[in-house]
Amino acid sequence: VARKITDLANCRADQLEILQVLHYGEGQEFVPHTDGFSGPFTACGFEQSTRLATLFCYLNDVEVGGSTYFPRLDLDIRPRRGTAVIHFPADVNMREDGRTLHQGMPAVDDKWLLTTWVWEGARSDEAYAESNLPVLSGDII
Image (cartoon, rainbow, N blue to C red; front, side):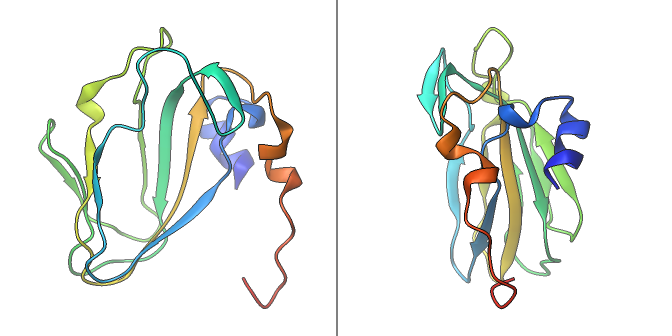
């Protein structure tokens, strides 16, 4: 999966934040946010960098609720399994782009996503590398 993301985003694996699987149950939502930072920021194993791209992929179809809404663009994306969304919360000069303000609308049906972020610089703390995560057993997956 990580290789497909690096090919799509034209980046290196050491620029990817750890992949995350998100689950929204009935009534859960995510408040408006951009995923970006204004100026250099240190987090998630990256120092004095910023998130240049957000990429998420819906893992299931959601019939009711749970869309991702970009209010400044009046863009509402309905979750459909396999649909990937990429947006750019900051530019290479580390200026946050407010047009990427988005929110996860309240879920009625369960919603599952896979998400990651591409940072401007390489990860400086390898404790946050995918290769250092414990392997999940087959009964979990």
